[in-house]
Length: 392
Image 1 (cartoon, rainbow, N blue to C red):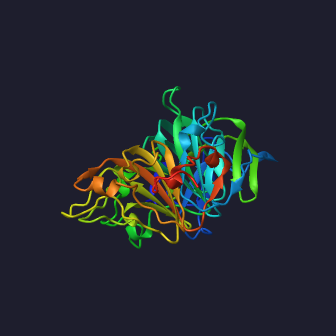
Image 2 (image 1 turned 90 degrees about the vertical axis):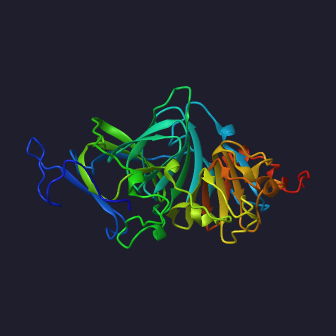
Image 3 (image 1 turned 30 degrees about the horizontal axis):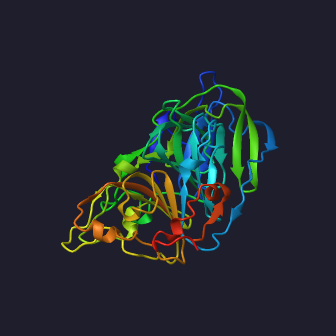
């Protein structure tokens, strides 16, 4: 998933002669998942995609990673991490991580270098600003509220496209496997079913090839043993056409159709994507519970198998009022801790017909460690906001 697309020039039959204007063969590149037994795409390059002229080690900035000890809920104010002169790849600041997923944040004001994540798929969410995602498959224009899924090993880069005074703010969720729609939303052949909160019409993929010239082009590679810097003989953006089911794609959180009911619905109704040992959910403006005795905010709950991360990206998140949560905040509610609405929120919510809130949730099935940048922007008082007492 997603569905089949055909972009640019491709021959009528796979793996047959397809020649350039000078008579030479275009170079095929078959990108496939799970040992070529799952989704794939076939790309046609003007130059050999295998031609590198140099390879060297690259050491990104090192960040300490520590366990959530003592175990407690936490609040991180990501806007405190702003730093000028950063790009959307190398400028990312890691916040939370385990062996399945890395969650990071960036406020970027300049283009990134070319980059390949050879470990797993990435899901990025644009909090604010706009950015152009360029890849060997073409380009996607992203703006506030957009998710983008970049499959494993796709060479790509980000070019901020908004005002120079307005950085693009992005949350990145990097997996150690593949990210896609929940299986329960799909038919056996991969079509979105009628009960899904979004469908193929809501997805955007590259519409045309993106061609660039250049020689000795550097590409940063994050792989299973660290980072490397490859130098390609020719620019990787030399694909004249491709087809298949594997490519970067975008989906706007504003196209997510909320599932509501007479009484409060459980968190799985908000699920948008799934990855290896984690899920991603979308909380959007919606009509709330309409039973005459309904309490619209969440009940106290304990997802005993998961750590819950919530990224607050717009509107007014009623259940957290009074806790210090604001635009760009991230809360971590770990397994081993029962969490719920702030004191007074249930009574205040009674009679509400609509919630204007926007948030992205990541639930992981293994505990998350805390990274240095997260600790640097932590609101240390958050854990005690349910008790109205000073920190212990």
